[in-house]
Length: 71
Image 1 (cartoon, rainbow, N blue to C red):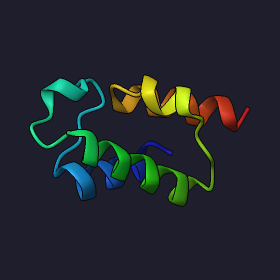
Image 2 (cartoon, one colour):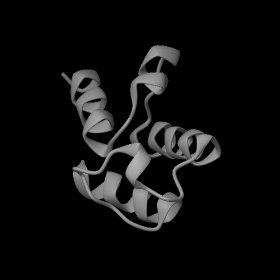
Image 3 (cartoon, helix red, strand yellow):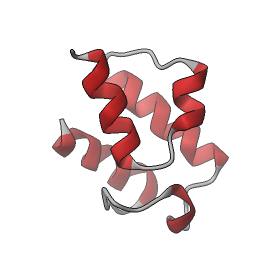
Image 4 (cartoon, rainbow, N blue to C red):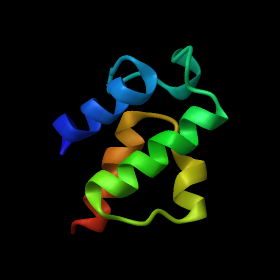
C-alpha cells in the first residue's frame, strides 16, 4: 500500500516523505491536494468523504484512511 502511495506522491508532488506535512511540500497546494485525492481514489478504488479529504495533511494521514477502509 505504501509503495503505491509513494508512486502517487512522486507523480503529483515530485517527492515522497511519509513524515512530511503538507506545508513542507513546496508543490502541495489546493490543486495538488485534489490531484492527490483523485489519484488515491483511482489507484486504491476507494471514495473519500469530504471530512477525510479535508483532514489530509500528510502521507501518513492517507495511509490511516486507507487502512481504515480496508479493515
